[in-house]
Length: 162
Image (cartoon, rainbow, N blue to C red):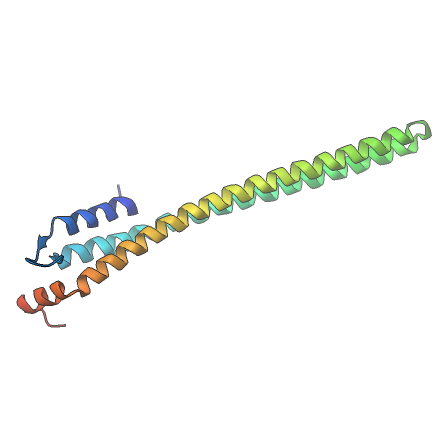
């Protein structure tokens, strides 16, 4: 089973925490291959999680469309019912009241479904945004650590010429 982005980030964090400290600095010597390997694994997992979030957003949109279709159907049924009731003069007032009630209920129901679908989509997007923010922050920190003076000294010591 593939590790999640969060598990991989925790692995990268552990790698950074257990790295050897450079004396008299707040820098550490990081195993570059291992850190880059974890970052590559994050890049591999992230698209799958983005596809999952996209699928959730598509499902929310599908639910919204279905709710709107139901609302239209309810409105059409209400209009048809209103027309039938209007044909009978004795029930004219009742037909108008029921028609208004059905239209108002359909509008409320449609609005409630739209709001629920919007809230669901917003939640999914907020979760996705937070996940992406965390990944980007971890990548930024990792890149900064690899660019720092300790990394340069380590690269020179190990004969790594960039």
